[in-house]
Image (cartoon, rainbow, N blue to C red; front, top):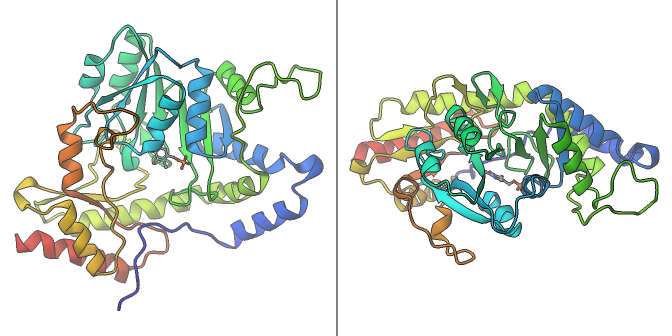
Length: 371
Ligand SMILES: *Cc1c(COP(=O)(O)O)cnc(C)c1O
């Protein structure tokens, strides 16, 4: 049997191992926030944003941000039906109402026309997810948000290393969130980051993430409000610093792998790989191929073929409204349905070698040529 090809694996070097060791030795007492502070600083610098707040997960960062903006019961929040469930859960947990729109076939991100058409007097925010490192149409979404006085939130969990007209994903909306889950390009095992240019929002998020304790409060253990505790640990942050020091290298290799797939598959009309978007650079978190409708190659066929070759098969996200969650049943998303039914994510990790890439490409070529 050939060796299994995993769809993702983190890139952990001596640098991360030493960083974790140092933090385990000295990251206590007066140093108990040292690596968290360093991680927030290097992240803000590399991404190009004034404020960055480390969290225990991206899901937690999103909930904190929504809470800091005062989004709750009676408010509507617009998001794409194609999404990881982590984008939806905090909206529902805040008591707000999710409103789903379809994705565009050429970006796999939410359709601005449908966003505009979904706005009601209750709408408070748009959550734009930059799917697989592709970029949502931030110019149009910003204009819509401005016109209707809505918050624009960027779920950039999959978009580290992605740039929109020169600005890093996550830095354009009112706030952006990132994930350092073990599957992501930059990882701390679990972890997240909220970034913003708004000093007051940053302050508000920090207070909420510290059980509602104000930095101005003189009394110990005295909360100004009920908050949250979605903090990152110093140990994880130390690994995060080491990963961010390797940011260029980590992103470069992800892009390189996507480019190799793109080149090797370019001659097959039946296969669409992550779209190239004018003015944008993708961080290439997740290569994904979508077969044309004519090809009759389905998600199930792709899953079977990958499994037979001992390659991890990971489906394109199911439309959230197809899961029967929390009484959510709105069905408006022909593109989300259709693309998911003909797609598969391709393995991509830093240490992937050319033999492994060949094996993945060969499975796809076989499917594209049998017709
Ligand atoms: C990974 C991911 C998240 C959640 O990140 P966690 O750190 O696991 O909470 C949120 N949104 C999207 C689009 C993701 O891909």
